[in-house]
Length: 142
Image (cartoon, rainbow, N blue to C red):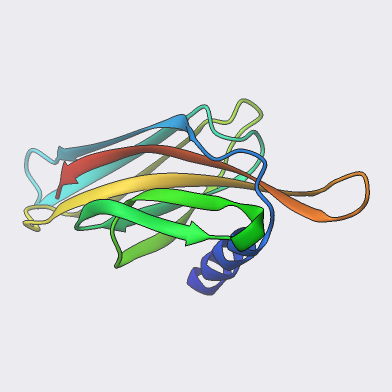
């Protein structure tokens, strides 16, 4: 799964992009279990590309990472490397996606996340292209 995420992000970096801006809204809400040493982290994304895969980038440092596509353009991320990428899933027909995961509580981590939606397509001449939708950055503690 992680290999697939990496391959898709590399493919996105190698293809022309038609739009790259903050075009979706990301929210991350950790909720601590009242009795057990667990917390549920809810990840909600609204307004991304419809019916498209979304990757969640998570890192410890805010900053800028520029993905230079040479003549094809530049994708700007608001996280500084290093960061991890996770395939979050596919958006629905309106570009929304929600996931919840249960993890141990009180990890003592301060993190930042940004979602990247990706839609691969071909132009009328058959040349591969990619639509990219980058979310806002969300800071959260686990």
